[in-house]
Image 1: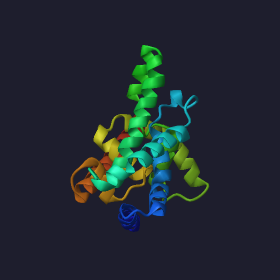
Image 2: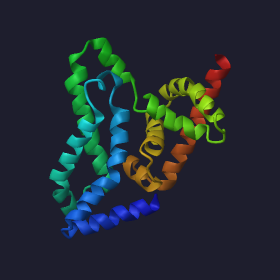
Image 3: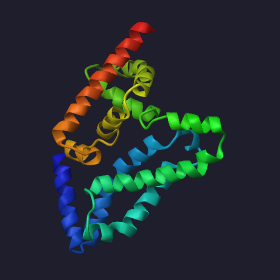
Length: 209
């Protein structure tokens, strides 16, 4: 991950010097991560009508159009800037599609979070089951999904976001801290507290079930 940070910095330097290939490589480096972010943020109710790839393409087009201005005077680190653009287009998709639905659907959409899709939960569940061996690991992951879904809904938003940044977007600590603000050490502490609290909630849910 640290090598990736260095790669991003190198590509940014080359892009500022007019290297067209560096600009393309810069976007390619982060495209998969942006696609995971968008897929995890899109509400399931509209995923049948909106392909995450379409939102990704809107984001990349905006990046292409605004990259020169960014390179001239970067307001924030590069990936948080990309992330902000992607979330803008996700929010626009929600406004265009969810806001046309019934009030009850809007309430449900607002209550759902980025880590509640099955694919997102599975990525996080794998980290909790990494000591298991096949086929036991698959069984452990399946059993944890429902527990994790309930526990995540009870986490504070900042802790949910920390888990998303690490397990969905697969970000290095330097970028997590850039997105959330504060130091890398603070980001690591938030992560440890989030994981600890999530485990506590899952264990409490299992024992009461």
